[in-house]
Amino acid sequence: DAGVTQSPTHLIKTRGQQVTLRCSPKSGHDTVSWYQQALGQGPQFIFQYYEEEERQRGNFPDRFSGHQFPNYSSELNVNALLLGDSALYLCASSSPGLAGEETQYFGPGTRLLVL
Amino acid sequence: ILNVEQSPQSLHVQEGDSTNFTCSFPSSNFYALHWYRWETAKSPEALFVMTLNGDEKKKGRISATLNTKEGYSYLYIKGSQPEDSATYLCARSGYSTLTFGKGTMLLVSP
Image 1 (cartoon, one colour):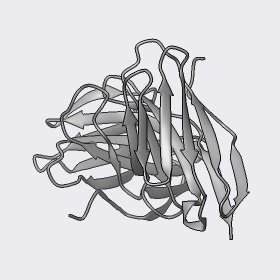
Image 2: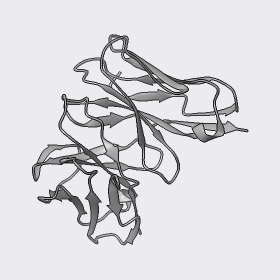
Image 3: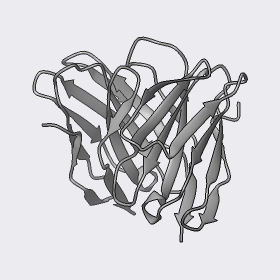
């Protein structure tokens, strides 16, 4: 089992550009969540996808959007990049369980640098 | 408490020392408390999911306790080893999302 994988590992963009990050969940998992970890902070929830729909969303602007495919893999898109979007982006997958109790398994992250 | 808070921010101990960290969280609408261990350049690794007041979980030399009424959890490491060096994150569950603290960075010197 490969676990949660993310691509690319690192990315450098300039302000105003758009970026797409990719995530493949752990085998058997159908729910994907995305988190942003800025320097010195804990991971912050962006949104969660289940059955190809956005189920929950954190306090992030509409520039952040996502998609989940029928094979449960997911993409995170960020438009009109700002310097403040520089961060580590983590993807986590989980399978249905009692609300709040399901373990989320994390990938190694994509480090985005916006210049 | 409005957010998830962890203390100390960092800790440096000698091999063989026992240590503990604290996670404080809002106690209202509580679902579960998660602990993760995150080594540099790796994925965060799930340690425990705790749901009930008074819960106590153990995995090898690492254990954790939970007090949902007052909103705190303790993580203990007995006889720290250099391979325990990592950032330890706690997260409070909402319905299906996690709210993380900033973590405690542990360094264990040989």
